[in-house]
Length: 102
Ligand code: HEC
Image (cartoon, rainbow, N blue to C red; front, side):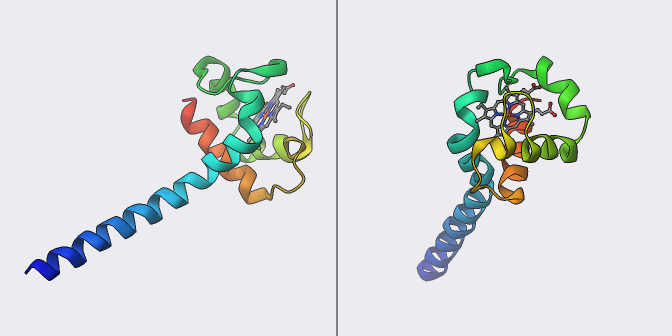
């Protein structure tokens, strides 16, 4: 009985960690490569969490937002100036950014 409880607790902890890791991807990219501008709205960047600014952008769709970041837009350089980022990184970061801003 006690052993079963330990196993179940271990499983719960493990699956919990896996979920956090998957969700943290976008956040990790955002914190490292996007927050510098978007957290404070630097250089005219739409500020993270500013629902009014983001609503019309979100309407253009995730694919359009991903493309803006891949190709660059205005003062935001292609791949947000970080060539090491993959399309998946940018997609995850955008998903995170949108989630914080709607
Ligand atoms: C050097 C500052 C800077 C960094 C770093 C940066 N951005 Fe931006 N971002 C901007 C600016 C400025 C705009 C507004 C561009 C415009 O409309 O002229 C913008 C616009 C956007 C938009 C809206 C695009 C559209 O279609 O209007 C998205 C989405 C976005 N950024 C996502 C990201 C993501 C994701 C990252 C990190 C991978 C990131 N940005 C990093 C400055 C930055």
